[in-house]
Image 1 (tube, protein in one colour):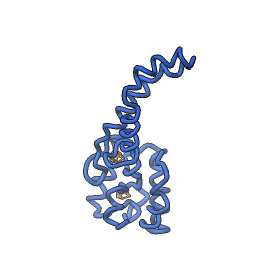
Image 2 (cartoon, protein in one colour):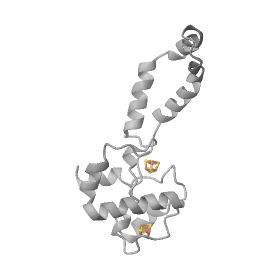
Image 3 (cartoon, rainbow, N blue to C red):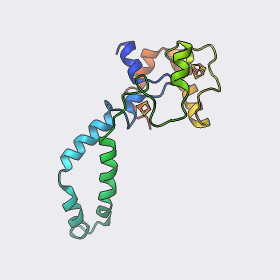
Image 4 (cartoon, rainbow, N blue to C red):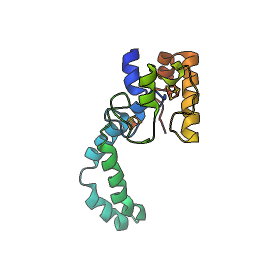
Length: 150
Ligand code: SF4
Ligand code: SF4
């Protein structure tokens, strides 16, 4: 994949927007829509299966469906195009634009204390950026492109 295309899927902090549940062009939304379509009118059957199959787990179907509906409605265009819907305190996007870098590791202040992330996320972002710096963005993307983000 070309650098510019990779940039649309990898945020400046290094997190993989392409595998985010909120990403409108991601695997999760696509699989959720397919599963929703395949399940059709399963609500009726879920109710019946509680007794018919003696499986109380089917009582939880409405909650599962609610989750599936949420995943199916993902509408984020990714960090390069709009503000992150998950990390509302993120400062990386605007900061990287000001610094004129595509990714944090390209910034002379990296690693900084200006991400707005909590400790866990900050550690993850620093580790990803270090790896990108070491092996290159294209190789890094190739290695992680099929891995789940979570
Ligand atoms: S910008 Fe945030 S919410 Fe949107 S796809 Fe990327 S990580 Fe997910
Ligand atoms: S100052 Fe920090 S958040 Fe901003 S681009 Fe540099 S490393 Fe990233």
